[in-house]
Amino acid sequence: MTIPFIDLQAQRLRLAGRIEAAVQEAVVGGAWVMGPQVRQFEQDLAAFGKAKHALGCANGTDALALPLMAWDVGHGDAVFVPSFTFAATAEVVPWFHAVPVFVDVDAKTYNMDPAALEAAIEGVVKEGRLKPRVVIAVDLFGQPADYPAIKAICDRHGLKLIADSAQGFGCTIDGRHPLEWADITTTSFFPAKPLGCYGDGGAVLTNDDQLAQLIDSIRVHGKAVEVDLRDRTFEHDPKYLNMRIGLNSRLDTIQAAVLIEKLKVFPQEIEWRNRIAARYNDGLRPHVAAVPDVPAGNVSNWAQYTIEHEDRDGLAAHLKAQGVPTAVYYPIPLHLQPAYERFPRGAGGLPVTERLKERVISLPMHSDLDEATQDRIIAAVASFKG
Image 1 (cartoon, one colour):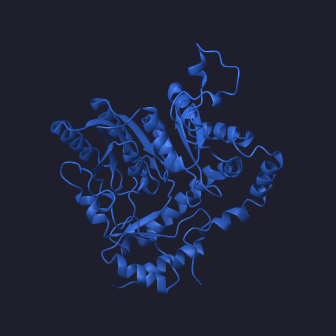
Image 2 (spheres, one colour):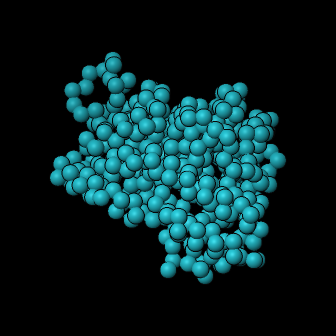
Image 3 (spheres, rainbow, N blue to C red):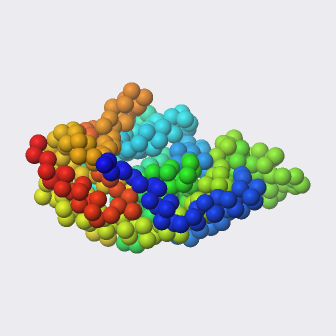
């Protein structure tokens, strides 16, 4: 019997009809776009993330685009991104005719390497063709990037910092969320994420009042917001006074209803995921090239459990034959992808990224993974003699 890679149905059944009831209430309520559940979820999300503001949007990709629009990122601007991540992180940059600059990652955490970032910024400044504007650091596989170091670099060079927590929302450094350092945190509620909805959705979190207003405007077609109406009289719905170019990027009411219930159990599920990851580490360390490395003081949400192996593809075939699914993130880093290979790479290249693409493999991970199933997975890995 094949083991699920991520068992979303186990969570649904554990919540014993609470999500179904919440969805039904939203359906009966009839406010299916930006209804009261959206506002409630935004309040709950802000409280969880220790943020002044949380704003839902249509998906995690739009969440990245919204601050770039608010900051007027565009022609001639450089945005520094890791290559070892999903395409969405870099994808939004060319939307606005800016240029993604690919940065190497740390060999242990797989997150943006501060030293490589500094070198990339200095290289761009020296060349003089682009203006450094923004850094997008990714919380890959669930653990936070090195925000204290990255923030210090951003401050030295006058750059904005986005924490792309599409995979890592809920991760912390010494009990503090990435927003303690970043100008904005973005996340995704794609169903496979640790905090996922039953469709698509995303959000941004910020402590910047003006930025929050601008993003609220942009996500609804550039509608007028409080800052726009201070010296202006407009007696009609502010969505009919368009102050800037915007998007149609709203979190559906039904998805917000799902997320309200899932957020209630999210802190406990992060604890469960960490217990599962610790068991994996103990059982697998003798049998693989590397188990995940989480620096002291950091807490991962374990969106994925990713190991390294010298014969990654052989191990994947061996596990598949035993009913254990795996996934490879990311077999072709972005700087080697056809759509992105024309964009610049940071000074020194991306040697760590190019090594990792041959070695990493992810095993089943979710908050309801029971010990018997996990032991079966560990035994399957240990039995590989390739």
